[in-house]
View (cartoon, helix red, strand yellow):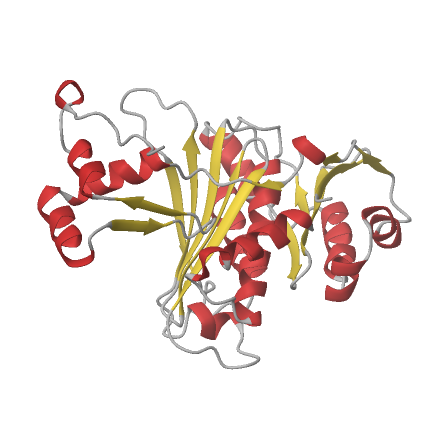
Length: 329
């Protein structure tokens, strides 16, 4: 089963996490084909989306946040959008929008940043929003400080963590048709989480970037991890091989009903609200052309169908709505 492993390096300001998505990831890919509305992802797109999903799991596991973390890449290449969403309970879903053909062996930059106009957005969407509360979103380009195109998801996210959180971060990501996996190693904040309000402590964070020798040593070990090792080795073997000389304190793995797992948040009610957002006139136009309003979920493949009576009920005040269609016996 899919699993998440957290660990610390005893006596050092370094933490880490390892995620292996197996059944959760293959469920994402299987749902892509549900209903026959979408072709399977090309291998390059599949691997990109798998890496994004593993990264979203690691980032969600690293924060204490009651809500969803949404990781999006908005591209200017054939991949127009790639989205991975992970809830605070580690339930996840992911999808990608592709236009045109994908050349074999195409790299990350050419998939999403062909003209250096792509961007990455990280959104924290609270589960129980207070009145007027908005989701937090950070957006970064898909290029480095010198305008160079970044050629891996991991480099984009490392750059984001350095710029937005002033934290040294090492990410190793990999995915194929069976597994999406990631390893994260991060320098801990100088004086713990929540201490970045003051200018003095913020400056201390910035001054610590790249200076901690313990973090640099451990990050060098982590970055030596090869793609096949990350995809094929179990967590115990992988962590032992990488950090056999370090004093690693591991926490109980999170798996099963509490671990990473596929779950879509779509519903007929949400789709109905979307149709209402289109407006009565446009909904009627679709009915006139097709006889039914049909909406498919890009995440799970479910198809929602609304006939003329269903649509009329959406636009009728609850007290005036006709009774719902009853099954014929």
